[in-house]
Image 1 (cartoon, rainbow, N blue to C red):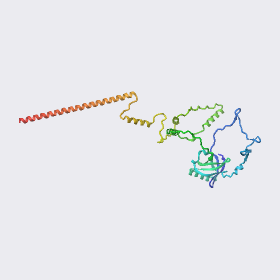
Image 2 (cartoon, rainbow, N blue to C red):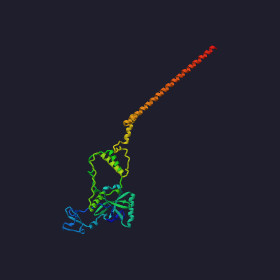
Image 3 (cartoon, rainbow, N blue to C red):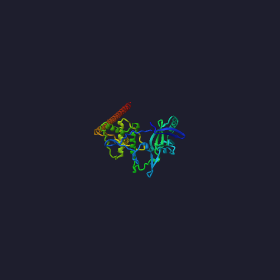
Image 4 (tube, one colour):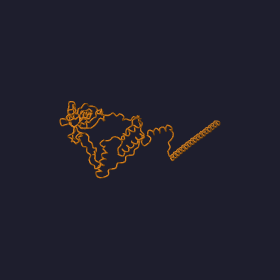
Length: 370
């Protein structure tokens, strides 16, 4: 990678020679402007408006246009003598926690490479100090004709720098939030949480620019004289009138997509303070069924459940009738048996009494004879 700037990092009294390299690159497809009648290139020529002639790049310099239209020329020598310490130095001014930096301020990213063997030890020292402190370094530097703000952090075994906007360059989000008062219910938040859990996480390495790939297919088809691929019809969509229905449909679609791809969605326990969302299929929840069953048991504890179909009801009735008949027969048999036993007991007692009386009469007769 080619360096775009050479200088040093000023870390207190420590100076670290470095080279600045772009950390990102663009893969966007660029187009040329053409004349639609004959495909001729449209080019812009740099013309001096006073002499009305085209000038070369070596003849072009910088100038500041004053309010009255006067041009004040500024040379590279003028810029090199600016009274700032950051002309060729990345000056670290503070170390702060990374969460103190608003992502809105982040701009272009660069890698800072050690500038030769002498820079190896101080470079490594700064890198390890950043690692151990879990902080980032805030620095000032000059690049492309202006002083800038930067953030230094560790990426792997290298130090990266993100260009930062100055705080006054970030606009306040006034007027962006809805000015209409709305109420979000817990069930809606629960469904939103369920949708987030169902979608799950993603490996950023798996994401790619589908627009660029489609554009490459169009260019390849036209270059070979073929018709470009047709655009698939967009999915029919309507106005979202019911937020709950839209959330439920989104959760259902995400689950089906996960199931089709063979992935399992992460399921998270809902907070105790919120009511559980309804199932998307329209079925009642298990807890509701349990409550209803318990209520029915309390209302009629002795009532037996019957089958929903007529045939089941008849079978149940016949079973009850048979059981009642058997129970009655058993009771009747038991009663007859008890009565018979009672009669037999009375008959035995009577016979015993008559025997006793006969024995007494015989004894009395023997005494009189004596």
